[in-house]
Length: 146
Image (cartoon, rainbow, N blue to C red; front, side):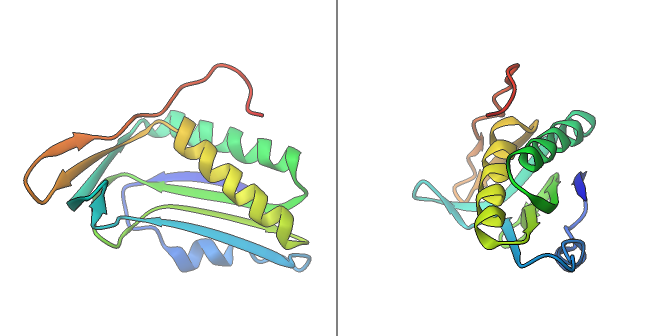
């Protein structure tokens, strides 16, 4: 099972975790990216994510499908949040299930790297001093993923 979603609501971490359950799954790996209170030595107040959901979902799905072709996964799932996020809130969730841990770990890390590089969701950071900055955006690629 593969599924990638973009939501403007809080990510239901427990619900996504349940979707990884598989009787053959010996290795389940979950990555939760949460908003932290600092970036490059500066205090962060909150983040705002914007994205183009139809393309983000399509791109995320392509990434999950590519991961399935590289590793023997039982499930590959992902969700990215948009909108206003406070410190501690989940911004992204990636989960993989495989018969063995090595494949689940490798696939989860690769998926997260690809999501960060390719999915059209952009982050705006508001710092404690009032400054607002956009982080480096998605790099759109035309070639197939590795």
